Length: 96
Image (cartoon, rainbow, N blue to C red; front, side):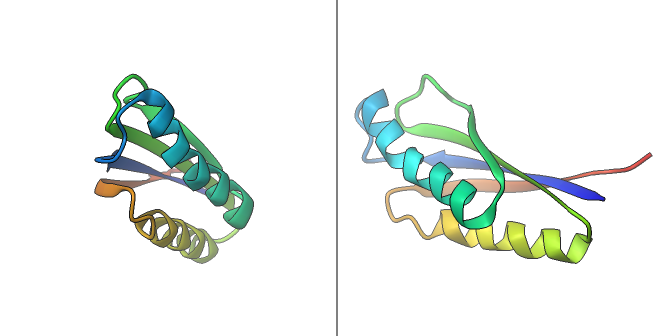
């Protein structure tokens, strides 16, 4: 079993309220969940209007498949013109 997560640090220049922010990130999170069958949530900067931290995680039987899925998720997040990706950090869960 292989598990990994990606943390996205986003800047939302068009958001002028928390309601605007939620309207921008909701399609990203729902799209990740629906298209790639991953767990996705806002995990950081919940009270900031123009910042968002999104976490996406997945589990797979093979590391190769997991890499493919997370690569597709990263491309999906980068495809939204409303957000500027400040950083994306991938972390792997190591078995003991």
